[in-house]
Length: 318
Image 1 (cartoon, rainbow, N blue to C red):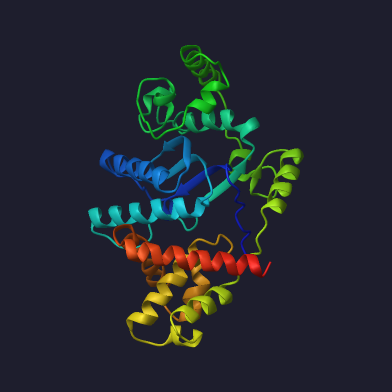
Image 2: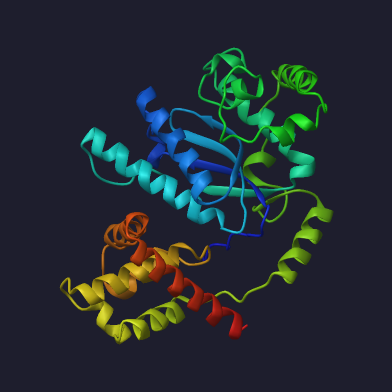
């Protein structure tokens, strides 16, 4: 069954869940947790998004993320790829660290963000790891309490819901979290209330559909991306499946992989099947291209030109 495409529009807020493969731990010690938070910080700067809350558990992570113009997928792919590379290198292992695709619920922030932040901060309490939220140092709760400084964390929106005065807002927030100590598992924060992708009422769903109509671009197909990139590299699509590592074909495959990663409705699995390559190799090529572009301004510029051409293709054919 084809997976449902993610919903994106500027200012959208998501509850993101990232889990270890087969339930494995993704943090072994505090050095791992510090590295993950550093990647979150770098990601907010690079992809112009905001993190309203986070909670690092032993084998999974919860985030409340608000995006700008750049889709959530680019932020999450960057963080998960770089952390996996760090983790595997440090432990001397190979393979997948995370359980496939991250899960993300688009939420009605006006009605659910404050409760979601409390729910995330109380996750270690519900799991029996601590008896109070402030005893868990690896969530954003201490920053909300004013006991820790995380400049990259956005706390102002949530605290402003309690009071316009910071000290009073913090007091009321702490009381609000304490009042939720007896709270149980909230199914809607994991599975949504609308279509398995949304957390909000019918009004929110209707408003969302209007936003999507106003910002609609036709979804491009894998075949169209392949043909577009092959024209740029003077290749025939069937050449991508040829054996060998000829640079022209290899780079074209990596560019296609990168563009596929940036389209929430497409999968690298389909590309791997088309090119007759292992999924891990296709993923590595795309992610490696992203890393190279960080230090290579010429490559970064070329990729932006390619993206612009693809967007133009989508707009002209919609």
